[in-house]
Length: 235
Image (cartoon, rainbow, N blue to C red; front, side):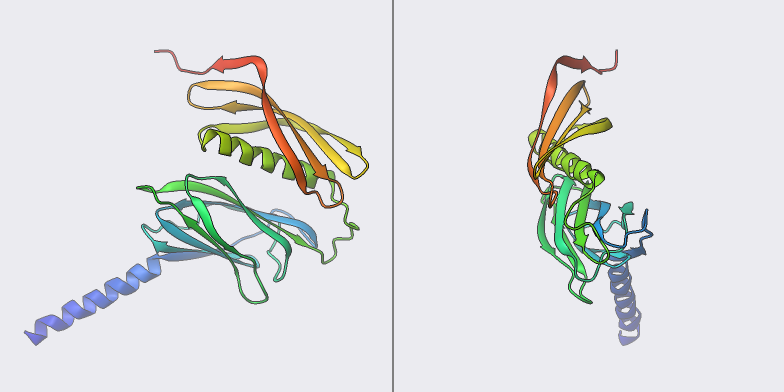
């Protein structure tokens, strides 16, 4: 009997080691552009079944499945490596049916951690946007460029659109928005279109930001009158 138990035990050991190996994966991220300081970001797309932990350090991102089915790390787009001690570290859930239950900024050799929880059955796609401020070599004297202001405004509008529509539908921005500066206030005006499975609408959006820190004070959008267009395919 003992002779039969040994292979079974070893098989169980190998299976547990294999499962542990499959529960995490990592990749090295090559940035989309040099970034010696100022604003930085990473956009991460990941499928989640139950509970997942993302860990970020420098140019490396690791996904660990804490519970549920494991999915390898999805597409990632970054402006540059994550600094060891960034300022204004923040994480936004741009798309996904669950929630971010924990975020920890990187400190020294400790990686940043982002835990995502999806309580519903099956898996779902998530888009996470991580932003930070690295003052090493920024040289901007606290003034952010127009591109940073536009990106922050559009991120805020995207988040508001997702909140109102419960993640159903897509929002696409058009062209280059207009910017208007009044003292320490910066306003961004633009247009775009919203679409779901049945309808498509033109919209306009507007944001107000602090021109010194690029902090979004308000973000709103509204549909153009009479701009509803049915995109239901004919039978």
